[in-house]
Length: 86
Image 1 (cartoon, rainbow, N blue to C red):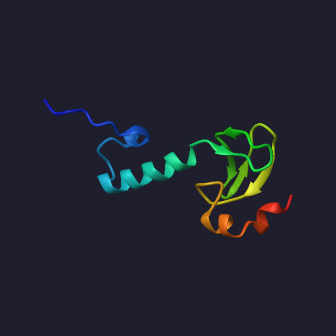
Image 2: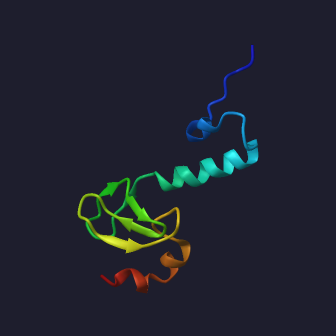
């Protein structure tokens, strides 16, 4: 009997769409739903995404612009001037 694979969040697709695409999608979605620290209240939680690139802290309600699937992009870490605006 074959070993059962653990596929995580991509398990809902079953055998469809190919293994490479499912793995890539899984990596993106795991980054999206992991806990991040709010830049204002510094609490770690799973942040809300009301629209693509718009992120909101569920605890304090602070809203900011980030990446499509992650709240903080690499360019935003290099140049944090935009994140200081309220």
